[in-house]
Amino acid sequence: MTWGDLANKPVSRTVRACCAALACALMAATPARADTATTTATAQAIIVAPLSLVANQTMNFGRIAPTPAGGTVVLNPDTNACTTTGTIVRVGTCRPAEFSGMGVRRMRVRITLPTTITLTRVGGGGTMTVNNLALDPTPDLVPIGNGNSRRWEIQPNNGIFDFRVGGTLNVGANQAGGTYDGTFVVTVQYQ
Image 1 (spheres, rainbow, N blue to C red):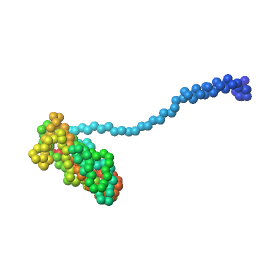
Image 2: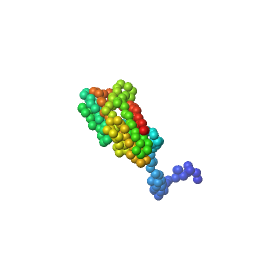
Image 3: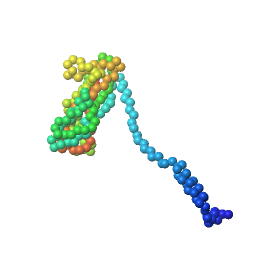
Image 4: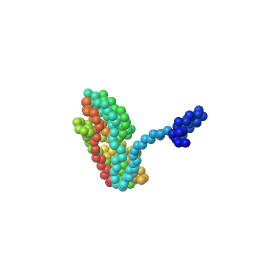
């Protein structure tokens, strides 16, 4: 008997039922396709060498909706809070720039900040300035003298200290939309 002969033979109900049961069992035993997703994350460590300065965190004023009147966003480095003036609206993350240095306990440092920072729109077409830069040295640095000389004394026993910098972002009337970036130089003189 050949396969062709078998194909022409009548099939009983029992055989049909067994074939149907086998087909269902095979379908049930097949696992469902699993979906997977992957992404890339970053890991970071900051090494602070003796008598050095490292930028740990960038200054961020959040997302701002400009208005015909313009206004300011004041970033307080002590509280990490932003407040606005004028009719602009601000949402999102607000954080000061953060820096780390390393000397020895009771060593004196002089910290120099710029007077202004210029932020330029990526792709061109606009700028904004940050002025009234403010320093938050607590708890690692204490002022020496009247505090106006920007001289500080390192307090931690290991000599590693952090400080934060904030300021006032000046948003123009109908400021062009987009991302604005800028750099600034902070100097620590170890004495």
